[in-house]
Length: 538
Image 1 (cartoon, rainbow, N blue to C red):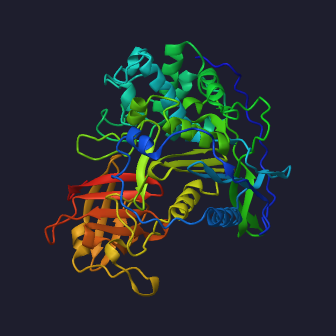
Image 2: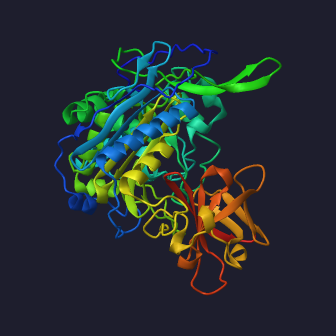
Image 3: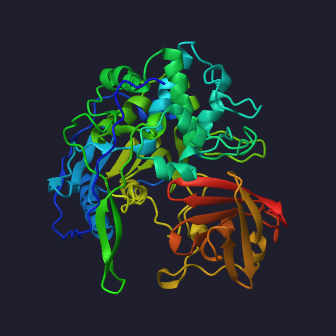
């Protein structure tokens, strides 16, 4: 095990006092030039693999830069007040122009330190694209092959007689169990654990599934890739990040997020919990310090810190061919397809999809007290990053709302919004619309066409039930969840929203009248999971 720095325990104290944010939340917005990384949208688009559907012809309805700044400011203030949340830093860059790079709220609530453009956040699983890029550099140098077995580099990890390749680890199709899902992890996450203990948490009696038969997000896979990098290079992972990426690329605030070093501008992480007063009566949500976490176990799956500005620059460099070759980047942004034909929508450390007809390359991150979301819309030369030091504020939701507004994309349920065939499956497709903004009426017979058993790409079963014109889904909670029809049946993409969750199901209808849907997509924010009908029983 190689680690350059010690892995000290994080010393955080839980507080029970409430924190109230008023409408006058402090914010700093600094428009200006974007990082100078020359790249054309056409060249960038050519370098990207099958990221979502083909580029759609979309009318130019984009708002002005000033309107985007005002909208972001409004969204950020509302998100912190509603959370409640501590702080946010948001970056929005279009072409060569930085529309927004600013902070809202507090980087440290107890000290009253404001969040700003230079606030340093833990970025969680955004780390994975850095790990993937480091590995692709080793592939380019001929020191590693994507089809090498893991056992060549980490022979002690038990794959139960199955051959697991580096490519499958990158794609999350290896079947390697997720160590952060182990019951032990929550109990021991504050400890400085050696690799052997972490990997033991990521080992079961068997793999979760045979390699390349399903897709299931696994932090263990990217932890193992970090060990591969250390084995091949003979250097600790944190040094590789510093010396191979951060320093030469000008990412001055990006590093392994060890707790011990002094990092100017580093934010503290928070969670929201229920405040109870007298006789157990719920009063309101309050902020508390996040649970302590050693930064050893997250390792190459989620241990980096960065700023919004650094992540904007990183994205421009990665998409512009300055980090890995265009051919390597194409592999990073080409989703894997399973033998049953389902797309994983995941490349190497990056998700692919589309929002209102606009293709994106995206990932998010979550680690104790911190959430992050980063997306690049290559056809629109738009980058959006949202960093939060509160687990109660959703950067994914903010990013989607900001991007939708900046792109002039239709809102979910709006008439004329397009579906997944080039668009991210928003509701109201095909011009259907209800009266006074209400959802459209469900076509006769549609409920029966979508009802049935489905299996998601990760193996999870879902059942869609129909009783008259009432449609519900089982498998996403203890009780069936009602579905509300948003439209799209006329275009062959019947779209429903799942109760109050905001998640959507899109059913792909065959042209033949009355034929049942054979495929379904689940949209959860920016992420997308495909599913197949599997008959009467999953």
